[in-house]
Image (tube, rainbow, N blue to C red; front, side, top):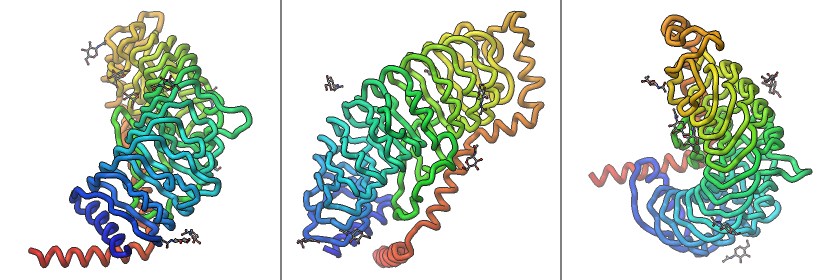
Length: 438
Ligand SMILES: *[C@@H]1O[C@H](CO)[C@@H](O)[C@H](O)[C@H]1NC(C)=O
Ligand SMILES: *[C@@H]1O[C@H](CO)[C@@H](O)[C@H](O)[C@H]1NC(C)=O
Ligand SMILES: *[C@@H]1O[C@H](CO)[C@@H](O)[C@H](O)[C@H]1NC(C)=O
Ligand SMILES: *[C@@H]1O[C@H](CO)[C@@H](O)[C@H](O)[C@H]1NC(C)=O
Ligand SMILES: *[C@@H]1O[C@H](CO)[C@@H](O)[C@H](O)[C@H]1NC(C)=O
Ligand SMILES: *[C@@H]1O[C@H](CO)[C@@H](O)[C@H](O)[C@H]1NC(C)=O
Ligand SMILES: *[C@@H]1O[C@H](CO)[C@@H](O)[C@H](O)[C@H]1NC(C)=O
Ligand SMILES: *[C@@H]1O[C@H](CO)[C@@H](O)[C@H](O)[C@H]1NC(C)=O
């Protein structure tokens, strides 16, 4: 058994680092094992998880992601006390189906649960509220049909909640007396069928998005140094995979649902927010001027709604804003001029017939009291104003670069010595063997 397990570890390490691919399937785990880390991601494995996997009683990190595994997942993975030390369960990018086991017991140690991109259906597992240490919950891209799991709001460490592309429906409304997601930094509920008003009460309680230092969470350093936590989100119009940048990235994506009513003023309090996407809903009313307080914002998408009125001048204060999309609304009046607004093209405003001024071709009447905008761009615009230009540059990826380097720092200080030595030894052995084949 020991031999088999080590073989798997090596396989994973090698395949990850040298990018080989093999097709094989999981064989059985015959007896109790003291294995703590089991990572076999990205190996094109097929077949089902043998129920004997429940023998891995000491397992702490189980990562079977990015394979072609199918079938249902054994109940013991949801911990029914059988894997009391499981902290990471990552099955994303496979073909598992059926219900997600609903047997998480009180006192379990699960911190990361990633089931993204499978075919899970049925209801949301309510027992997840027993996962007191849960930091990351990613159930995106499945077929879960349920209402919003407001009871997760009590989980004190929950930083990432991804429910995108499922069949969630109904209103997102908190229960009265619970605390509400105070550590959350990444909320992605896009591409569902949520309806009703935007959840003002939640926006008031997202303390993690108001001031990142508000959130005192356990560090992720105790994770294996080559378990790469990642989450796929839409940033600036691109679907990207963020790896290990949990602590610095904040986003709210509620796009492509059926939300209605106004954008609450209170959103302007989430001053650590970097990405906000409310597009493809039925939001009405004005754009609140408080959004001008979101000084960390890099991407704002309010397109395809029913917003009216003017674009608030306060948005000029968003000096890191790199992507703006207000198209397909009913906005009117002068487009704000200056700072980042000098950099947006007219696609950002398409489908708002009442907007005028740079960069759309319709100029504003004397009433609006502005210069013809083209000259503003060429003479007083970004070319002649170094300060503005600097802001433009900083807007490009500043947050991401910072995030990534932090990730790597964590990586270098976070890996357990024994594992480094073991992997190095195995690596050398294998390299020697490969050489002797040539
Ligand atoms: C596995 O360990 C548990 C307790 O640690 C014990 O009760 C059980 O008999 C063991 N099973 C085998 C097959 O060794
Ligand atoms: C879980 O971890 C604790 C503390 O590290 C250890 O004492 C215990 O034996 C572990 N349980 C299993 C089943 O390995
Ligand atoms: C979700 O479940 C409800 C019943 O609980 C059903 O009426 C509805 O059709 C389901 N939606 C989808 C998309 O499967
Ligand atoms: C965030 O909180 C820390 C400590 O709690 C404080 O020092 C800092 O000034 C706060 N930042 C903002 C922008 O409020
Ligand atoms: C906002 O979400 C929509 C889909 O829900 C997506 O197409 C768009 O690219 C996102 N906007 C940005 C700026 O990422
Ligand atoms: C946020 O914006 C509103 C409206 O623009 C303003 O009244 C308020 O003072 C701002 N709050 C902070 C903390 O800057
Ligand atoms: C803005 O959003 C619309 C859909 O809401 C999309 O068609 C368009 O490509 C987006 N424009 C930019 C510049 O991102
Ligand atoms: C958008 O800008 C392009 C040139 O950059 C121009 O040809 C086009 O007419 C503009 N469209 C509108 C609606 O202003």
